[in-house]
Length: 378
Image 1 (cartoon, helix red, strand yellow):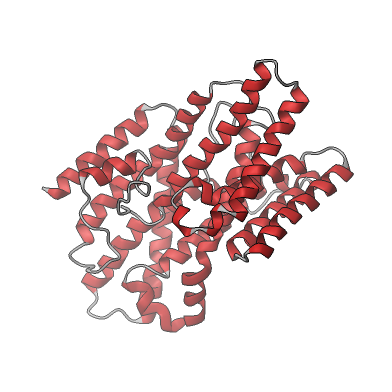
Image 2 (spheres, rainbow, N blue to C red):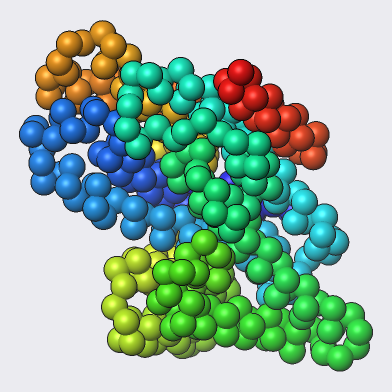
């Protein structure tokens, strides 16, 4: 789901990373497909246990996204533990452009589809008519901090991802600034970067992540994100003993956090980060995977953004055209919604996400969001 980490130097394309992104995204889509609209209710009798597990636990796949996001951010911004050349403010703008362009385009689709299906799908599954403040807050990735209702499911993740990237960039910039001022040499600056990330990661796991009131902020999720960054640096250590020591420290950090307060989300993030440490020196990340799965990984962010309006559209069509939706019909409609979502994701990725290179694209789609909201209001 995570787009390229932003900045001028993108991380390498690792097939296994794409595969992990694809699998995690499929779980998130299945989670939403088991929760929203009348179709999962109708299809539930066919596989009640599966639907229940997906509806309850499928959201935990987000932790894999968070770990991979931190991993790719470290690979892009500070592969050696030191911020690469480039103004931090510019990198933050580049990150916003990469995140917001497909996100805003998908929100335009959401607003239009939701207005279309609202009469056919009464209830809480379809967001209400958007307000101007709500749309502006979404465009600025501030919707949760300003307590604005979500225009689509899962959009909280985009805002949190941007916060996490900004926090990581801030830590990298502080170490780089002190080095430029002559206070630190290169090795000390790099060590300081890793220590600051480890410190904030530990604080998040032990303190912030245990208070749900903070789950609208990046501080709540930095534990998983930071584990991904630390996993990248640990896996790149040349000395085998150094890698083993770093692996044990990472395991100890996560183990202490789980001992203090067991959380399944932290356990999954820890397992994912330890796997990434082991995978790097063994060359697993470069192993070729099934090509459709790798392509799905490239489209995962777009799929995450666009599948909800597609699900609503298919659900409304089923409600309108069928007097009563039988379980097998509902399952077939869910499969059709998934296939259409993949097609829409490919289009969104190729037409918008892959072309997001300047601030003009999010500006255009942001204006489109405002105009679409005002249009459906009229």
